[in-house]
Image: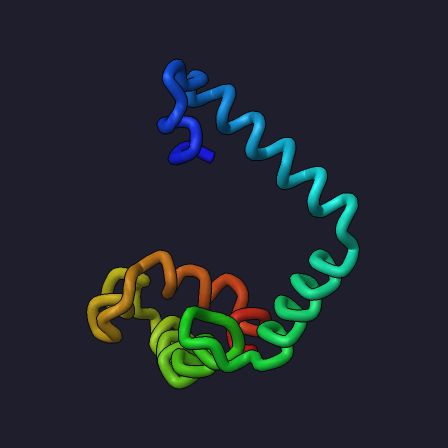
Length: 106
């Protein structure tokens, strides 16, 4: 929409182009059920895979050994800072693993 707008002698302001594009997108999603159904199916297929390198179950599983080690070290009295430095992970990750050991170990 931005490129098409630039071709006019007097282009509309960017905010107007953005609002028009958003309106068109809403109309298409509302009135073309087939396109929406294809999108939903694509998303569902990606979710079923569960092996995306961008996150999800597969990525979470990579850290299960580290989580266990962090919990052991915490029980031994090590600080979050010491654990994070030893495991070479951010202290926020260690804190999360310790606070929610069951939910983060899936």
